[in-house]
Length: 387
Figure 1 (cartoon, helix red, strand yellow):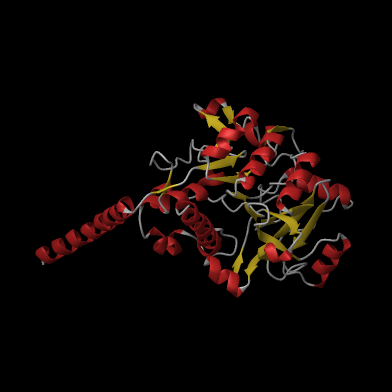
Figure 2: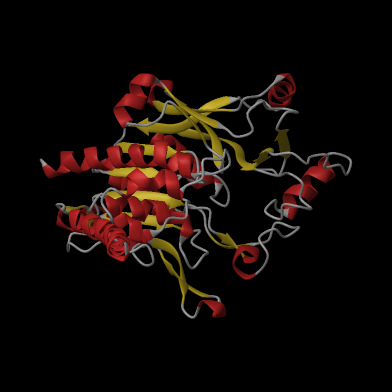
């Protein structure tokens, strides 16, 4: 009996240690795919670099490497805001696109990925992000050099991917307008975010300035305690779509036609419980996926009073002037365990690692983000590899 039990323990240990080793070996021997990527993140205010972890996880898992054959490091292989050790001292560096370097950068890099251009406020970096007032920006926004770089990359027919807050404040109106015309995508002036609890006494993630702005605009009232979606425009106007009061499904849906879903390998309908922009494309044929807010009569009336649609682009592709994709949300902002990016087959076990609850981003990563981005970059890699 002791022999049988010992054998079972040995087999269990062998499986526990053997499967990860085999998974790592399969990943390690897979062919590396050299692709030089300039990734920009101006909002990397955490030590973990959570704001762009999903992007680096995907690149490593798919074996995209730098031209020197080394893998991408999420802690240092990016442009933007870079926290400096020791982190408790709150020091930082800025790695920016310099005007004199644009020609060499566009020649060197195969693609660009603007994960987040919002930046960081003084409160974000030094204090409480749920502060009662909108504090002064420390760094951020799309600037003139960024715009010129993007224009040159598209002019060379190189892939550019952009995500949440690409157009919005603190980007200036002049740069925003020029960028919108360049890529033929236009920001409405509104952004939104889902909160699983709108009771700000219980949920400290709801910023105090949002509460204050809403109260100033609504006779000092904030009558919300359920989950819901908060919309804010560039002038500070705040609207709230509360679950059951205004919307029948508490989070936005990302919907994709069956033919496009098949082309990109994404789920036709998936919940998206994070930040998003409300924008539109001049040519609706460029829209790959849409956001849908499941408004009831009250919600429809509220949106209509402010000329806000309940259905608007989530992902847009513009091939008319280069190859540009706009993901109107903070899609790459998802905390990942980087070690699993080196285990081939680890995606098969994601249902264990990610929650299925409606407010979790894990399902969106699995059913939309990963298949979409991997398809876009892999297809592009095949094109430039055969040139």
